[in-house]
Length: 391
Length: 66
Image (cartoon, rainbow over all chains, first blue to last red; front, side, top):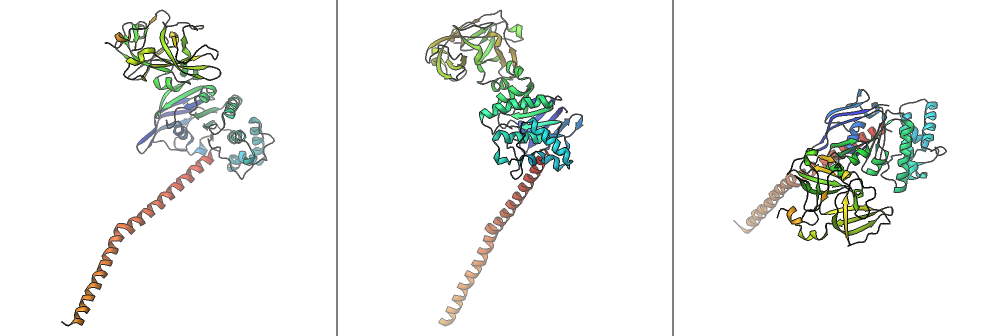
């Protein structure tokens, strides 16, 4: 077992910087997920760790060894790929033992390790089957067993569940968690699926445009996002954002205001800020059970409802004020999550409030987080829209 | 100059014109069409060869991780 450290790693492809001065410190035995949108550089980051691609500059350490210029076979790692890549002409036993046979291991040792790995991934009794006789999940387990037999310091997994159906993916998620608990090995996992990242990881590293945005435990990324990108990327559906500015009385936008003392949060009047609030922290005035610190109610109008079974997503518009906006789509809508049995209908007036303790403020220019949660003392108010626009 | 000589020299000049025209056209086609096409073909073959080598190298590196 070993930790992995990336120090100022850059990977440049002609005019594209895939990895931009990446610094990562992954601890021994940790399950870290690299997550981000397609093309953000997460797979390239993993490939620099694996040795599949050479870095343009920077250093990669696995344990206390510098492996920056070592070939993959000398790095003490095993990797599970998205396309599984089993040899179709080999049976399960031969596929799992491929790496060991390549390294000229003793026959008895190979058999012992293969049987142990098959037991870990629950493939006993299937060792003589050909890959085309296995289901997608079983094939993926063979690929994982092939990695386990190597007894590597670090497991790398590049979207290993991406080609599986939704049900199997959920099942394999728990299998991987169980595997991590059992092996206690460092696992670095790449995915664009934030549900996988949130449920399996000790920490998640959110990457955008080749740069590390935040690396923290999943709930920290969810509750205390470092910037607007992380706030918008983590959580489904996304966080609501409303642009406004800090005034002497707190936050003010053309739609609504929240009062607080800016000095308490190190903010100054006139500063452009973006308010963020998750759909589950927006409540109907009639249903505020569990809200520790509600804001003053804001009149809105329901638009479209999305029943999901266990909850309903309600798209809200800021009432008749729509007609006064230059761009009715910009920051003038909120998404609210309500119980499935809630009495809501489309195109009706509804009074909503926010849980102030769950509100976030971001600097609109730098996009960095400024405040996570407002304290309980102040109250919110709905400003006169004319006044709020400065007319 | 009698008529036979006129036909002889006239015909010769005509044939000489098309002979030279053919050579000039061939040289021009060679420079504008055939040589660039051959160069493109060679470049494409080289590119394919490099891609194949790169792919094989990548596969070899991936196999080291199995």
